[in-house]
Image (cartoon, rainbow, N blue to C red; front, side):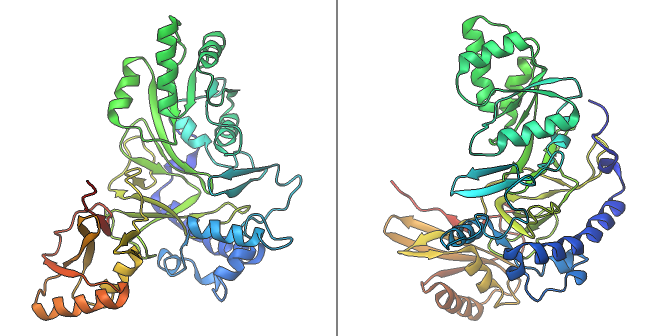
Amino acid sequence: MSGTFDLLETRSPAEREAALLAALPQQVAHAQTHSAAFARILHGVDAASVNSRAALARLPVTRKHELQELQQAARAQAGGNVFGGFCTLGFGAELPRVFASPGPIYEPEGTARDYWRMARAIFAAGFRAGDLIHNSFSYHFVPAGSMMETGAHAIGCSVFPGGTGQTEQQVQAMRDLQPAGYIGTPSFLKIILEKAAEMGVALPSVKKAMFSGEAFPPSLRDWFLERGVAGYQCYATADLGLIAYETSAREGLVIDEQVIVEIVRPGTGDPVAEGEVGELVVTSLNPSYPLIRFGTGDLSAVLAGACPSGRTNVRIKGWMGRADQTTKIRGMFVHPKQVDDIVKRFTEVARARLVVSGEMANDVMTLQVETPAASDALASRIGEAIRDVTKLRGQVQMMAPGSLPNDGKVIEDARSYK
């Protein structure tokens, strides 16, 4: 699989960064002017000054649950905006489709060619103009089917809208149409191939696949390779479209060219050091749905070095878990931001992790802190801060700098539920 979808993928990192930071103030100003939600969220922000990553990091993070709450609040009002004021489009020709994700959260689809920007990921998975793709993502309610179809059309591919379910009919369609490959979840293609084997039907044309929506571990990748299918994965959401995609190098996921990605400490908007696991926060340059510092709730980390495929954008390690680690302890919810609030009270503390242990109804809360200045006095002060912030008593465990695992966990629930 040689080549790239376009020249943007191989431009110098400096050229890319300059282009993104030049577009950023314009997008912030556009969001303030045309999105009622961001007019409120970014009230008082000088858009022209948001021209660096440091300036971007000072803006508030809007997380998915907040988007849902704002949508619900707006819809509860007479004549309220169904998108919570985030979308800049009105119903009609400029907004041909509306989708719904669980929640529900409603997402717009505009008229821009390859609106969700999926072509880049599909191309990286080996699909080329003239291919027929069997698309088994859903075409109703959620946008996944349309996301993939519009990306495939941008490459010049034809699409069979297989959707989900009806496994025997899926096998029959593949047998009759001889598609070049499949797009959908890896688990469903596995079901299709197993059903085809059970039916005694050969599907020799299906040589490539692009997966999303589920984990795609190396064991499953190898299972497909043994059956002649080279599968690649991408990371996308209904809110943002494509965020990152796998290449033939199979070393992490390359970030898309039209988003700005930050990795922040869970529960905060503070960027972490390169290589440290944290929450993916994405700023989209989509003018129709201009999400500024949108917290995905997913954990990942930046992968050092350049992609061997020749693509020059930053890579992430892929999905590494969920960032929302809110935990109920002794009947009260404790949030990652509360742990961060405690840490910020002490210059002696670099990082911390709240570990909840014990058996059900007998919770033990221990704050593990990395500090080069361990002392009983510091432990006592931190203990007071724990009670002040969480309204719960907790133990303090001093640890050497660098001792805590780099896994993005701020709250670890280690309780026994037997």
